[in-house]
Image 1 (tube, one colour):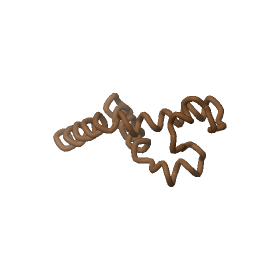
Image 2 (cartoon, rainbow, N blue to C red):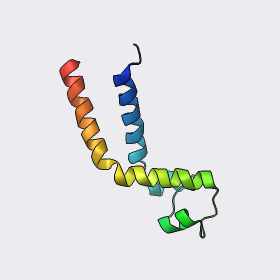
Image 3 (cartoon, one colour):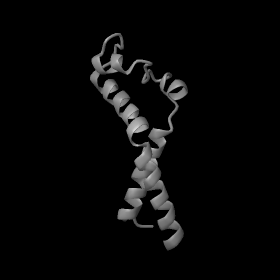
Length: 86
């Protein structure tokens, strides 16, 4: 099985799906990648974290918030392509 453009796009969508469905209260608190107040994360107020941890936290927040509607459309498109082309 060769990794073509469609396979690469499908892998990216699956990774984004995995990031979008992470439950912040159960999964991310264990890794200290979740704060109730996003302003604390962005400004590093009481959230004693390094710059890499802040970037990962903000990335996860952005994926969960802003990428859900486009991910639904991408998932529907991938399902239709898989059904039609097999």
